[in-house]
Structure formats: structure tokens, C-alpha cells
Image (cartoon, rainbow, N blue to C red; front, side, top):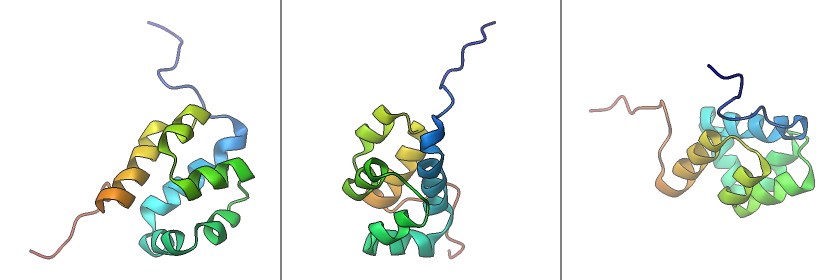
Length: 93
């Protein structure tokens, strides 16, 4: 057994970006607002300018390189590019 983590704990500076990525996945109205005006939405979460620029540019690789958890990044990418939401299913048949 090892004490090493498969994925290291995110840096304190990235708590805000993790929070906004989770919120965008869970709140469709917030997600739509983010698509229309990413600066306003990211401004509410106290992100540094680099984090805001990464989200604005949708630079998924750079987010992961910065240390943002890859699962959150992939969820954002899927939601934006393919219209998919993890854990959300249409109730209509």
C-alpha cells in the first residue's frame, strides 16, 4: 500500500476554480449565464485573473496543467462542447 495520492490535493489558490466548475455542472441557469457572460459569473467566485482567463478561453489543457482536477475539467468540456451533463437525465420519454 502507498501513501501517495493518485491525484494530489489542489492548491489553495484553486479552491475557487474547483467551486465554480462544480457549480456550473450543478446549476443549469448559472451555466447558461456563464456562457453568455463568463466574466460576471467568474467574478462572483473570487478567482484570480489567470483562472478567469482559463475559463473564459475554455483552455481545458491549461486548467489541468495548473492543477485543476481533470474530472471537473472534462465535465465542463462535455457540458460546453457536447451539451452533456454528468448525473442529469431527461425525464421525458
